[in-house]
Amino acid sequence: MRLAQHANTLPVLVDLFREHRSARLALARQFAHDQLPGRDLSAGLAGLSEDEWSLVRDLAWFYDNLGALVMHEVVGTSRSRDTWAGR
Image 1 (cartoon, one colour):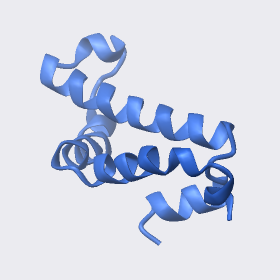
Image 2: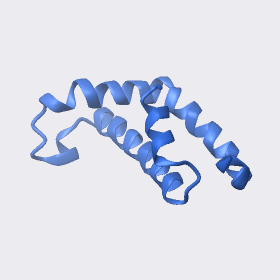
Image 3: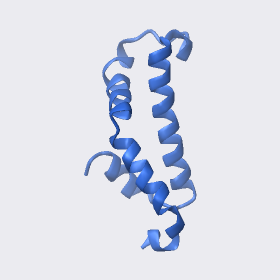
Image 4: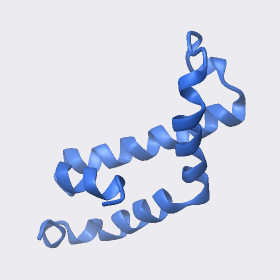
């Protein structure tokens, strides 16, 4: 129903789903989940290698874009949570 109200955003949502499923973001999610917790992050992102920093940045930008869609009520928070959790 909400998509009918925001029909011009459908291509954006399709691209967001495509990006979420990409090998690049899968690697970024895996890195953030499996490796970041064990790291000394006292230097912040500057403590990461350039490749690691790039993965974290890309993942952060993805969730920032998703947050913008939630903020503008293109997607609801419960549906977003279920979708990105694989439900």
